[in-house]
Length: 335
Image 1 (cartoon, helix red, strand yellow):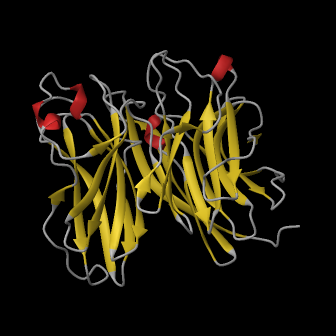
Image 2 (spheres, rainbow, N blue to C red):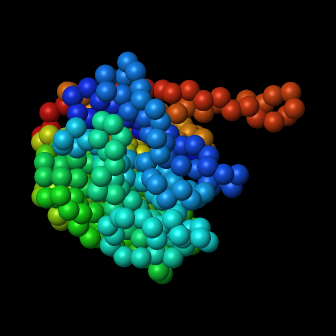
């Protein structure tokens, strides 16, 4: 699935964890979150295990991971166990929860140690958007999880939760955009933290006005400032963000200009003022082009994306070729 991709996370001293999806039944959306762990920096890998224990042939995916204390890592995912007609599995679950749900996608989390043992399995939110990405960031005091919420009135704004002092807080709406949509836009948020400075980017199309927004927190996600808009008028979304040490951030997203779809790059300074937008590359607006990714190492930003090339074949159909492109950009000192 173009939006439900594998993730790799380092934790502990030399441990790695990778997740991937595996079909659990014939139904289109019946698949599980599978995890493998290496305790020697990837030289060898332990046996695969399933992150969840409900055993239902339903959708599980859109995983985010982050390193945790005590040689553990945190995994967060969308979990469809409540969408099945038979909820006996979830009734037997010994999880903490913030409420109940009926036939809706849920957001769940668990910590795992180097042997794959689960702890603190938690139902974070009983009603969320069905297939928008989750995103998690480790702060100085815990974690912040961002995701797309889903109200009873089908308002699908960005929700978030904070984990501090060994406890999960209650779900909150980051900003009330008021995007009402009777279906999942497959366009989740991105979150990043540096210490207790947190930055979140997301896409909304409330009132049929597409926007890419960014909001900052200086207290580990307990509260967020009023968001700023950074797009140039016609964004497609598919955002990625990385927080910078001095308090700013770098954001990448897709924007449509005339007949072209562009990967855009914007540096937001420590005063939360967006700089000049740069175009990284042309790309395809098709789902196969996926979501650009960005990481920062030292004074460089590494950006990667899937480049799509379509060409006709002998049967008059298009052949789609994919390749991963990357670019490295210097990060200048923020003014």
